Image 1 (cartoon, helix red, strand yellow):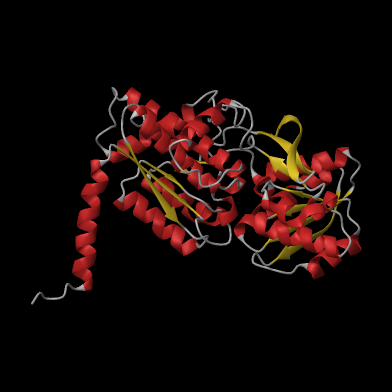
Image 2 (tube, one colour; image 1 turned 45 degrees about the horizontal axis):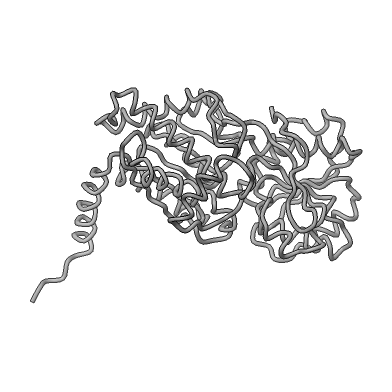
Length: 391
């Protein structure tokens, strides 16, 4: 009769198997997102990155001729889980690059990422992790939350707004950008009056009381720093108390088909900041996506998948450049490879995303800084106006 294997032995055996498997891949890239959990509605950006790298595997043999091992993991929007995943990606999977998720994890990991020397691309747009001098290994993919907020408020002012309210969830993603903008005084500098700020539970299912408070203040515009599930509750309860969706502006994580689909007329006129082209737009990248879709399942057909596809292009361009500069082969030392990829990402100029975003240069570690407004009209989001520079 076989003796039972101890828990410690089982763990050591699993780790022993994991290391050589990771080493077999020429290029290992680790991606995590909220595959399940409160923010799963926008996880197309994780699926999109994985899909693009698999597209390269299927059509070009990988990146610069090197097959890519792509690992997709579920952080469940739980900070402790995201931190564990990061360590697995760096230590066990030997990832040359890690693509993470939340504002909370990006802030928690920003010092560790520098110590590990691993390129880290986050889905956050927080300005607090955007500092090429202080955090040279950390990248985002577009206008910061703070820049998005100011774009929205400038647009509102141009239409006559004078009194502003801010609403945000009680997590880092909600609190931090609002705190930065309030401290900067930029709202007052543009001639607007901030009449109130409302923080609410991120998982709240009823915000009627908060919306009655909004109504009592009679603002001209309310900016929402929240994700799709919270925007749904806000707009639903705003309609209950007699507030029009036209009063509200959200960030790029509020452009989701579920909002007009679930709310109908209560969503008409709602505006949000758009950083990327829509899924299905007549752009070159959609031809690639359709070709991929012909042979594979596209999990999410939305704007966030487009962000993910764009992220895949950015990641692949940096890795390809690093390999080419090393004579067409990945550097044998993983630390050297990671450093080379970081340097290559920062050096990218006029990156062509196939129309998903304007051509982008990455010395600033955020790439494209252009944005435009999108508005719900006739039950769908319609792009309104030209791209404007967020800086």
